[in-house]
Length: 268
Image (spheres, rainbow, N blue to C red):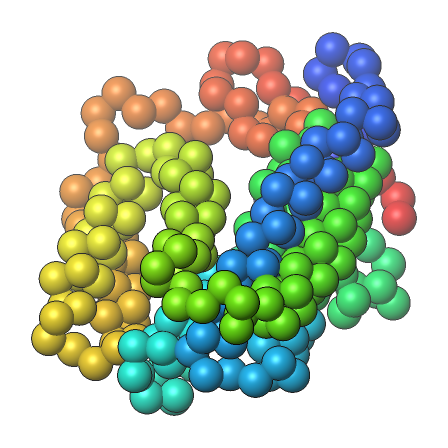
């Protein structure tokens, strides 16, 4: 039977997370990550893109890892189509984030196209960490608004100041993008399968870097996910693994025997 799961307006212990605490956490993420837009602006200008092209990427694409992947491949002399393909596949993950967030946020249809622009790693992480739908909506909105505004502002400043900065490799700014992406990714690797996918992707990407054109190793590294899933399906479930029980009040599954219950469906 299909269950309709939604966040309740209270946590498991009957308390609510203060709105001020949600705003504080969301602003912390938005400001911390938004400042790295300066590194993107400098890197993009250093790769040969103009000011308008650089700013358009942040305004329209707005997914840092994909943006850095694109300009990084172009700076290395890669084919523009290959660079764009690598950036596209990195950005596909946001579509899966959207499937989950659409259930948690339950936004009106009129604002969903606008909210989709803010579905990225950071907004997803902040939203999923909230105990109630109200907190999730506040976290998503504050994180998305602060990060989008600051990322685009610092992108502009970075592109304008690229000449003053000079060679981004001498300053190490070309490593800012991968560093931010790894910092966001590392806490998400909680299972053995996820760590295996990440490790295999690193081996494929680095191993093929010297022999394939720029941008292509990123595409090949994406094969790590289906390879790991095939291996996991053949291995099957490990003995002693207990199936998840019904979802608890926060929308997460509770192990059997813990008494987790599903939250009530909230009206929009």
